[in-house]
Image 1 (cartoon, chains in turn orange, cyan):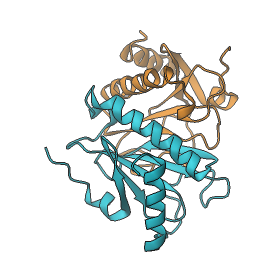
Image 2: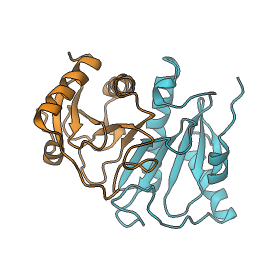
Image 3: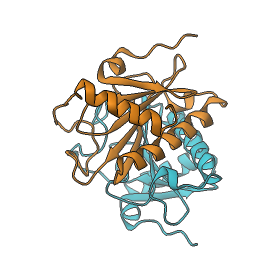
Image 4: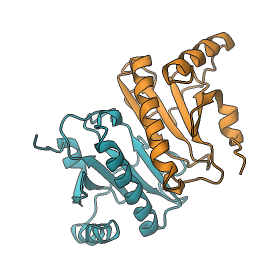
Amino acid sequence: MPFTLHPQLASDCLPVGDLPLCRVLLMNNRHFPWLILVPRREGLRELFDLSDADYPVVMQEVRDTAQAFAAMTTAHKINVAMLGNMVPQLHIHIIARFTHDAAWPAPVWNTGIKTEPYAEKVFAGKAAEIRSQIGLG
Amino acid sequence: MPFTLHPQLASDCLPVGDLPLCRVLLMNNRHFPWLILVPRREGLRELFDLSDADYPVVMQEVRDTAQAFAAMTTAHKINVAMLGNMVPQLHIHIIARFTHDAAWPAPVWNTGIKTEPYAEKVFAGKAAEIRSQIGLG
């Protein structure tokens, strides 16, 4: 079945590349270095909707991406979350957090902090750096 | 190395039981059916601090627990998150969400909603039900 990215994710994020199973997006908000992994399978809502074969593959992509993103950003802490209360398509947040970031130590959702999109050239550089760090180079 | 539960988790949660690798806690707040899994290993902070051997085991415990908790609670959505901005010991939130709950559709953290502890008897019943549903019966 062909995979279609949820329009809300397509609108909030910028495309970085595809791992073997997950699409990698960058949340278009300069306040937080924030990746979103979306398994390219139709009809997934909960983490446990992933098949027995896909689940460990997705979880390994999450682990490897989180570790590479931590090294790349020198984050103080990585937040990983699967919420999906607003956007029903299964997606996994991987967010680099810093003690000096705009929301610390609160989670990044519903902070009231205004989204700041990346300038086009800045995004191009970030995306290239992320692709290289997570092995999509 | 012996495992010691972080005092903040010990104070906020009630003990439910032990899976092969994770301790299972119930957040002591009647507003949200909310489990916390804590891998019983010393010195873990990030998800990717888990060893190559432990990581898939923990992730399978998360999956099985989330699925059983969804069935038990008839949740509209399960939220799974590893944040750790406040409590550095690696712990995994598994929260049953409802469209009529006190925070929906926002995440459950930093809502300003006052914590409501379980009555002792209610907790005893909940803990027994959870143990039975997640195979600790």
